[in-house]
Image 1 (cartoon, one colour):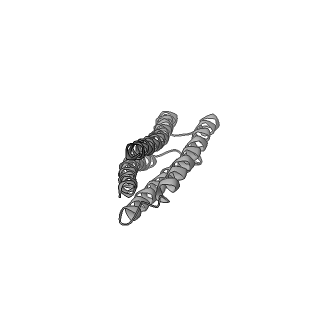
Image 2 (cartoon, rainbow, N blue to C red):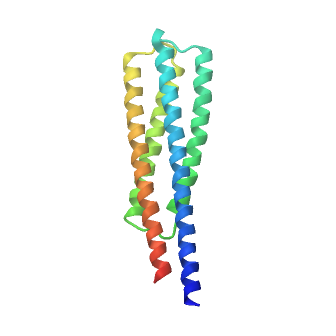
Length: 168
């Protein structure tokens, strides 16, 4: 009888680990999608503003990409909410996770504001505008990588705590 109970626990744990791995992969894909969309926008803007202007069709293209980006951000937020509400996640890791997520959101909002400022600008796009966008892009990428690292830490921590609960 103990063998069957151990066997159940083992398969339950393996199932949980698989669930967490799938969750992490989904979040990683969503973060990759955000990064890719930002790369597309930055590349488009670099090409579009070679003459210092963004025309109407270019604006529409960038606006469509920004809408996709917003959906991807919402997907990341849902994953963040899922992991941050895990009962096994405790401080100080919970606080660090929240700070990392808030930093990502801040950098996301910063680059969107810069992109909006560029595409709705009535005057020529300046080198300062391009530099600000480049810096914001770098900052967002760094925030995304920090967030994915912290999420991985959260998943490992909560999985270990759940496993410890099961065997105790």
